[in-house]
Image (cartoon, rainbow, N blue to C red; front, side, top):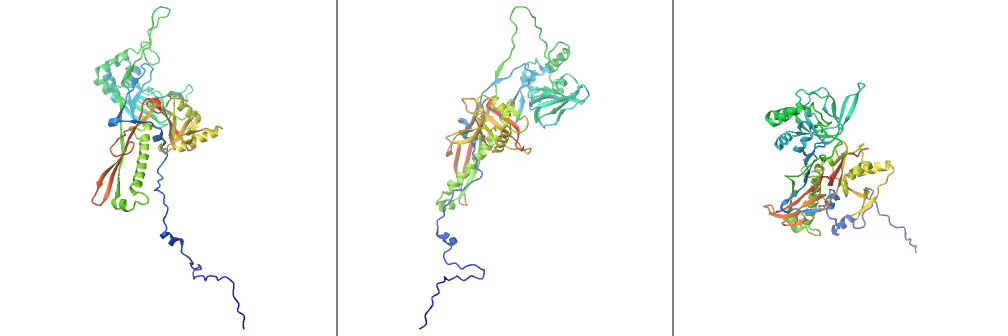
Length: 474
């Protein structure tokens, strides 16, 4: 009898022609067809922290408009012209034209208003000439914002600086009394400048049309030989050594006759959802809720962008000219932020693009300074002088790689910056945001009107300051 031999070696599966082993069990790909998947809610990269919307106190704006009543305060006699601003539009205060020597003493507000209305606003880039020596004087120029430098021939024939002019200064006023005036020096913009110009032709036209103005300028021209101070004012004769009551300096404060009103702006869209989708595909997530959630996020992102950049009410365009300062050397340094903070009472937050915050951190590191952090609304936020620096990517970065940093005080009680909205809207979904059903069309598509109403107001000028021309590329 022959003994049988049992081979205990495991069987090796035969390879297929392509070199792969044949499948011996159910694949995971096929198994997924019978499995229930775990899904996330729809994600959205556009969502940001939106700190501006979180930190602003919101004021109920009944009637859709918010009026900011202020005292119109300007000091007559300081030699500097003051302006009013509304968005990007700058206008000289008519009575402030009395700071120009040739116009000092005109009491007729209609005459001053006619002059103020003829000033034209323009933006001048850094390095551009506003005046060149030897050329005819082309108009009266008022510096609303920025710095310009005057250059003339020095004592040794070289070009030397004759000084800087800043917000409120003026030049070219000699055309009001001289027909053939020429520039005796160069005027060059040291930074981007907002200038208001009364063209020479417009000035001549007004002098011809307004007899009272022509008579006033004739008297000024005739009396220029009299004693005057450095501002062109008639010298005051003062007697010394006598007894009595000397005349006190005079000023006046007026109220704004036409206070600024902020109307609520709106961001809207029509959300469309097919009834079949809403009926059949609502598990495990409600399709309508998810569509609406992402739509509201997009509207809120647009709302914050408008509150920063809108030319009518946005913060970047509604800061007073006196509250805008340029950086000293380009990058945002501790010295720059100290000056920005020191210009206002009780600053509460700094708002900056994340790249500007990083640039400030680099400048601090160069000096061996390490800014602290503060616990703000449950987040660890970098701070300077105890004031949190909140990121806001809605603050634009220009092609020259410059941006701005905002510093603000908030709340009505502090005469600061406030957000405006109206609550109690029909079909309100969130405060100041409504979702209204518009019906179903012939294609069985449901439509919903999603509307957000908002604005932002600066109650007094020093509530908001801006550090401009912040370089982030160094």
